[in-house]
Amino acid sequence: IDLPRQSSSSASKSLYTTSTQKPQQPNHYHPSMGLSRTNNLPSPGYFSSNHVLVNRERAIAGVPPLQRCIRLDTLARQHAHDMARQLAVHSSVNSIEELQDKLQAARVGENTWRGSSIRTMHQEMMRDGPDQRSPYCRHNLLAPGFTQFGMGTAVGTDGKLYLVQLFAGDSHHDNKQPQEQTRNNSMATTARQTS
Image (cartoon, rainbow, N blue to C red):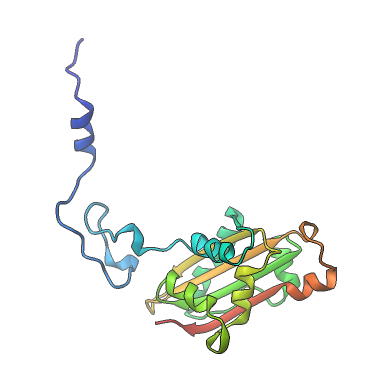
């Protein structure tokens, strides 16, 4: 049986819808906004990739980029959901040693933050000088001993975005002594909200 063939251009038109109207950009994205897949999405520039922002800062500082780690992403996402559920910013562990066990790494770091967007929180964490909110956040973002990175976010019922960043590195990738490795591990937790 010979069936008429549909041209590829007409097939693609039936699979995708386009909108001729420019979508309105919301001030803040929240899952309850119910954005439709075809015509009300914010532009790609509206969302920031935390991984890209972090590695851009590291490049400026002359530090090697971090490799994204799925396992760290999963742990960070789980903790971000816990914080959003509790509407509180806190560390996922009680000590550096506990974080080392959790991340299975010799060198570890954790940043937790609450704010309105990834870009705004990143700018707050990178702030230096007298306005610096948490020196450990900036340290973790730029520490040369870290090689892997994971992050997760969740939106709380307060409308705020809860962010967790996890960092890991292997001690034999650098020449620091064990005392320095322990001193350079850090957890940074701040409940400071960004606008």
